[in-house]
Amino acid sequence: MKLLNLFMVSCLALILPALAAAGPVGPVQITGKYIEARTADVYTGPCFANSEVNLTGQEAVLGWRVDKGVWGDVKLDGLSIVAVVRANSTLGDPYASPLPAKTVLILDERATPEQREALMKFAKAQTGGLLSNKSATTKKRSIRRWQRI
Image (tube, rainbow, N blue to C red; front, top):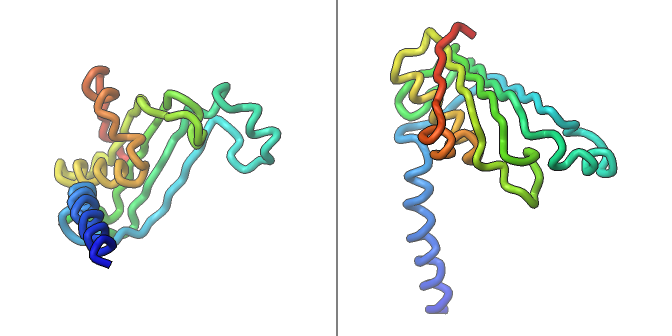
């Protein structure tokens, strides 16, 4: 029993700081719309879908429209962000990593600098690391464009 308690405490000690660092500082409550388009058939049978692995499916366009919400302490009501992604391999392939991925983020021009930063953090948190690859943004030229969406 002591060994089990020690194991549980050790797991919590390792997991909780990582969870705290990954999320926003304040409360999170976001409602809105999400759309995703990929260059591979997502909703097909296994025979057809598996024939496309590593041949296509590396590109995607992801879009978020926040109807109402807060990320951290920053209000994002009515703002949008679009991510254009070219991954290293087919997105969703369980046997190959899509990283490093090249990304272009298109941010709503109406957003303040704080809202732009919050929008980027929100999108990165939603994509499981796809948009937060350090080598794609520091070694290559990073493009940031603010447009009305």
